[in-house]
Length: 85
Image (cartoon, rainbow, N blue to C red):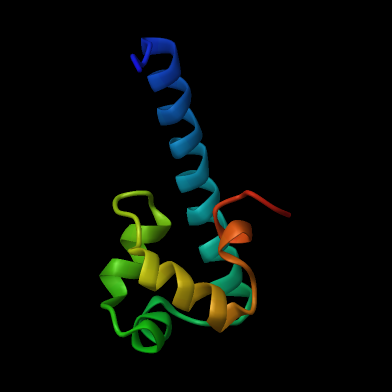
């Protein structure tokens, strides 16, 4: 099966939207729970700079970290990436 440029564009566009929503929701959840990036890093066993980079779209978390974030905040991974409200 051959993939067209328009299909690749849509995939990249959807990916970028999911990343943007994840960044916003992570920061929102962290702030609502009055957690600093240092606190969040300790909870997830990553550095505070990693948390900051997740929140500014510089890097994305692994599936394992995404799962742990969802479990900690009692939300679904689908919520975190914008597939549900």
